[in-house]
Length: 618
Image 1 (cartoon, rainbow, N blue to C red):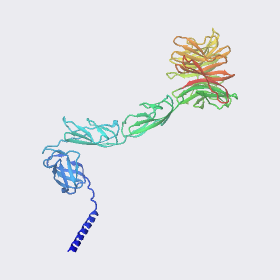
Image 2: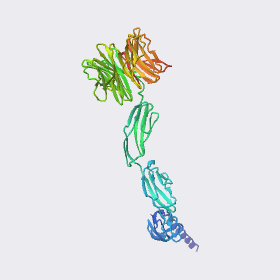
Image 3: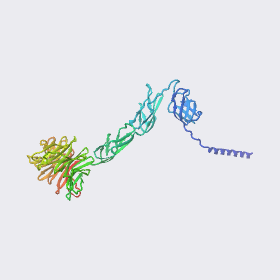
Image 4: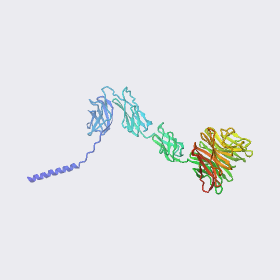
């Protein structure tokens, strides 16, 4: 008996073990997918109304789904995995619909509105059910309820305020790319608009320049060259600078160069950008045009910038630079160089030479000014055996031989300026009957005024403009029996001439500049057989004249050009004999307290003398 009970116990234990092992080997049940409700139709109705619910993961038989209107269970008549048909149950009130399938529940995001029998449900509609916008403030859109709602209030909501917001007035403000549903609610009625915000609308944006080279304090305008978009009207251009310490830009695209360096100017129109790389160079400084003379005795046309010389010619033939003018990135110098056996009038632009004269006779360019990008050059050229005053331009137009009276044998244009009204004003002098000189003023290539006397009246060397025109040079004084430096104001005649030298010695004005109160005339006066570099200051308020000696008269010297940087900052250039040779000099005036000081200009290697003809500050 005991043996039987032991055997029975062993059999039971074995069965339990086999059952346990078999249970461990059973596969895990597959996860049950959650049902979802995407919509239902209609959205309102009375008790007993048939409603179709659309979604996913429903039970495929009616019995495998539990549908509730609020808390009241409805009867499902037809079922599939994506659609259920049911009826509004007795006792249902306005609220959400829920579906339970596979022990998982989904609830609608909007209410089903339960109406009374025979009562038509209150619904609303919007003027747009879909909108496509761009994520910038200009592209706001206003939604409106088109249904008559009386005095009811509309409440607006956004399904995602990070993509778009909506105001109490239905104004949709797009913020970023994406999709959002804007809902209008009036009482229990709702209406939706799906708003898609996409990237755009600009498809192409280009500037008129992708690079700019500028000088400090210069201003240049950038413009939109190409703008293509999916809309008729884009947002305004927004301008910005990567480094406002280098260059700034205003809301019109005007770029101002501040300091040396590089900055990126960016134009932004909605989703598109275009850039321009601005490189700011320092072209500011004092420029002097003149010449240097080599040990071989050849004159080399030279431009000094801040005292550092740059040879404009190679030193094989004589050449001189007579005038310099700086306009933005461009440095203009005029003078002559010798080719074969002729002097040719030349314009150097940034060191590149352009011949102005015909080459048939000797010529010389004396003065240059730039206006609206055109260089105007005054000088003279030998035509048919006599010198003729000339006006050249670098715009491709023909050279102009300036008119004179019939009896005039020769004429010379010394200085050119363009006044505030764009008139080309030229001063010069004529020669006839041997050495008798007349002084002449041309305006827009015609004679404006002329002064001639039996004795030589003088010469005009320089012209300047303020409200009126001023000419400087010299005029012979019959009483003093001397040439006297002075200036003409507003026309060449004896009445308008003012002497600045006292008549004790011959004196010659070479250049004039104007400030609000004082006219500065640079030149020289011959004292004790030596030329003394001199500046005469004429006070327009009290007519007083102050004579400033730039050199002491130990050796000869002269001031040939004067340029005003500001009211109390003026530069002069010329020469002084040093060690028996001409030496280019630069003087500057820093106001009454500092007075006039001298700067000795450097010489190039191999040069033994130099001469400053013209000064310009930029």
